[in-house]
Each structure stands twice: as structure tokens, then as C-alpha cells.
Image (tube, rainbow, N blue to C red; front, side, top):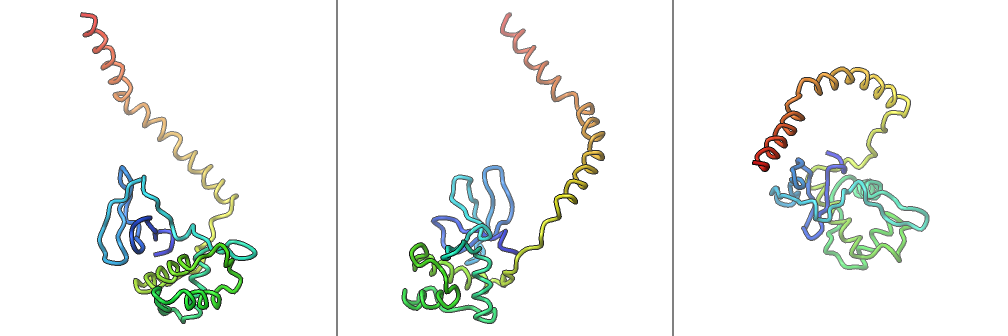
Length: 181
């Protein structure tokens, strides 16, 4: 599983694996204890693949930070997130020497170390970049062939189910007639 399916939910400890979407949100499985929870659309949720770390030059995706930690630790767990502030900052400076010390706090480093250890513990240690998306020309060609193939089916589907529109009209007419009498 890749980082595109791993979530951080505000107010909830640890990380969660996206399982399935529901009407009002989605189901997520905790990487800490394996319990499944229902997450509503109102909760603040972040995909790990969308998080970045400030450096002096640019923002570095969390995936790359985890990759550097993995290289430093040979794919094994690293120091505990419960280490002192000085130890955490020293460790992170070894991994990311150009991180922006004014915008990356010790609490952020603590969270990243905790997440890294949790991911490795659960066997999610492939932090390489995902495969590239197909080129725009290939996408356009696929869309064009899909539209041609789907065109007649869509028209047939509209004519095959006339009940949906006539039922609504019939229901509205009946209601209007019953009100007049």
C-alpha cells in the first residue's frame, strides 16, 4: 500500500488506512490497533502523500523525508518519538540539513518520527515516488475512444428508462389534481 491511502485524522492518535467510502464519509482502519472507524466529512483529514516539509529552498514531500530516514536507518525503525526535543532536532538535522527551523517545530518532527516508525512497523516501507501518470496525448486518445464507445450506450440508457422522468411528471400531476378536488 502506498502513502496515497494513509491518513492522519485530526484529534485521533496514529495513522489510518483508507478502507472504503460511505455516504457520509469513509471507513478507516487504525494502524495502531486495527480497529475500523467511521470518519465523517466534517473531520479534518490529511493524506500523507499531500503533506510537505518546509526547507530553506522549497517544500519537500513527506514521502522524500521518509525515504531519507529509511536510507539512514536501513529500512528499520528509528529513535522513539518520545526522545528529547534536542535529540529529535539533531536527528532531523542529520536527515534534512536544510529544513526551515523557524517553520518546522519539534512537535512536527516528533509526529514525523512517530509516523515513520508506525509505517515501518506495519510493513509500509516503500516511500518511492509513484508511477508517472500517462502523458496528456495518451489520455486524450483514451478519452476520445471511450466517448465513442460510451456514446450509444448512454443514449440507449436514457431511452431504456423512461420511467424516471414520466413517474415524476405523473406523480406531480396526480398531486396537483388531488389538491384541486
